[in-house]
Length: 268
Ligand code: ADE
Image (tube, rainbow, N blue to C red; front, side, top):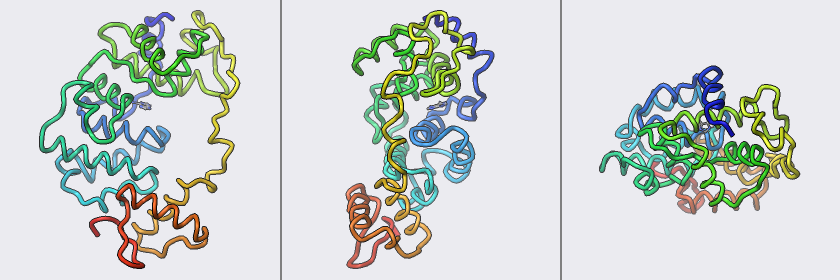
């Protein structure tokens, strides 16, 4: 693959997104945690709102768990919001780590997020391998790899000194051109180097699209957290068993507190 063609394309067609106009690690971390579970256009207004309420790590660290969960409401996976809050507490006390390894030690920060923040904030040359990057590289090379081999291949493709642009370009390519089910190879800057030319591998229909969202535990947990935030009755219409499983899961993750029959957000 010709990385120069990719970066030229990104310079022309790259998306202008709010978290691409900053190098503040806090803002970039907030965006990356939100983007792990929610589409870009839905994240933008929530990102702005979250930063309006918690403008920096000190403000977030000083909030209560209930306030954070309340602000996160509707973004899904509340556990990630609590991990972000704990990370803010570590950083408010100790300062920001300066590299991938230090970022990895923060609560809730896995290899992808650490690489994304390190490249976008510190300009570190490290590939942020998410599902978009994996799909693009697998198609270009026409090879499926183990996670370790894929990370090594991504590092090889990354042009020295251009880590941030490479990651952004690959994310945009994966999201807008090299899409999972309907790739737009006619618009692809690296089609000339692509082994598959958009052949859609078997199994590209993600398993989650086959399960109705209303049937998932995530849906039940979302309904429970919304009820707790808004101080409404729990969603008993979903059935005692599903409700109990959701409550137990939320309790395990520190997202609800039970006192006898009463269920509350932590810190309320
Ligand atoms: N998805 C995950 N991180 C992203 C980013 N920084 N820009 C656009 N989409 C993303």
